Length: 160
Length: 182
Image 1 (cartoon, each protein chain N blue to C red):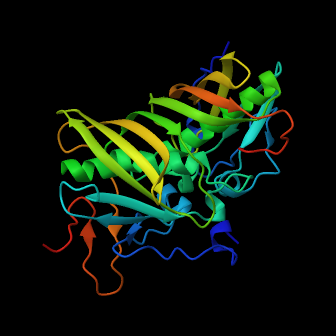
Image 2 (cartoon, each protein chain N blue to C red):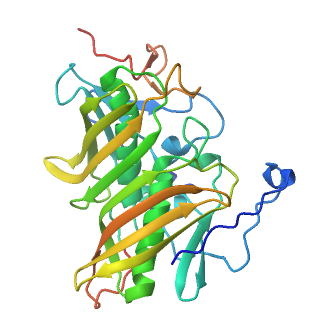
């Protein structure tokens, strides 16, 4: 099951834009990324009990016209976490066939956001994945997706 | 050097009628729509398939490691079509937060492709906009999406409006109000 987000309140100093963006312990930056993921990173990952949790700290380049994180960025990030969940659960690379997203709350610039996926079913060709993207105190995005499993012979990364 | 500035990227070379969207209007920090772009818009005759069209040339900074258009970029453009695009069709100039989006990734696109996206307004209630969206490369559909956006009550939330960039001396018009000359 999903790990609940930390619920401890943040001190006011945490929200100061001057404070250095810290990376929570256990997370490492994803390297070997290119294109869209590189242009919109850095993205981070932590493996906990065999499951991947991804995180990033949104900056001004991730904002929409309202000054909160763009829905497309949130979608891209959760999609990446859900695809990674397939890799860790089944050892198969996957591409997204279908994704449905409910926007539950805003993602705020400067907040550390995390995303993770859980494989809830699969056959030889398709995996069903549930995903969530959340901040320290609230849920941001809920996802349900179908991922096409690539042949085991194909080893290249198709999505990061 | 930003990936989008790499010399090996194709020129955007938008088809006739497309104008670059200026999302940030001179503000120093580009927001996400500028950062992932450039994005272009075309306004056609009311009630036609081309009443509101977004377009972009696939560049390397929009791609996945396999060299195809990244799903995140497709979803970003679809999200814009479900909010800004649907708002333009419905004549609503407020910021419309997304409630739900569902995407079917029908086909890939590759670097150099010109991608277009069109919203179809399914229904507008007082508080919600239901929209169907297709992204296409030529005649090929690459993404099918459906979107629900919320229409805030009253004047809604203050936000930075995008404009179509007509270049120096050109008329500056908000996207929701922009129409081709009659």
